[in-house]
Length: 190
Length: 86
Image (cartoon, rainbow over all chains, first blue to last red):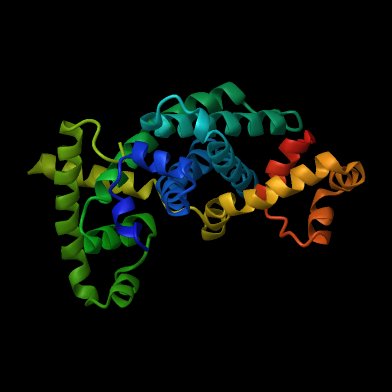
């Protein structure tokens, strides 16, 4: 529990450095931090089946863990994981296309467009992580987990009628945080 | 005002692009370092015991279960790589 709160605010490079020392909590933070990104690349950019996406997902984190000692730049873990995920997804598609010819090059072009959006999305999530717990929770539940006002109200113990206004307020805070981070390149989780 | 609304709609759209990965996938990835501790033992034993290595190569999941290990996907994939069978 020691670091559960503070780990989320560490820069990527610091989390990687802690992972390298065998810090299990730091490893869990690294997995949390990039799990949605890896999942989204596999399922949205390359549209892998659930089974293939799971294999790629586990393989990405297995290789990341194995190669922590050989990373040239800890701060570049995000593009490194992104590139690794791309490569493993393409390997999967190639393997599949031997059985059923897939329009590989066309898919790769579309995938790059989606990945560019996912990179922006991950930056927005980095800004989300800097908001108060209430705002993080409500925006994550509504936009990322697609929960209804009723479900959010029940889970957080707040009147469902106030959810819309809270979402609006929190989106405003997210906008400010995101703009602030874009003006400060190198901020934590970038 | 219109710009602010556009920016917030854009942020909402980007948030929607990153739903959580399935909980079981996350759990397996988080447990990876723990699984690796078992992995090191298994690889060392496979290097020292050819008969054991043969059983792993023949049917990895069954051999793991026989040895009392949970054949989680991360452990199986890593072991296949280390045994050179992937």
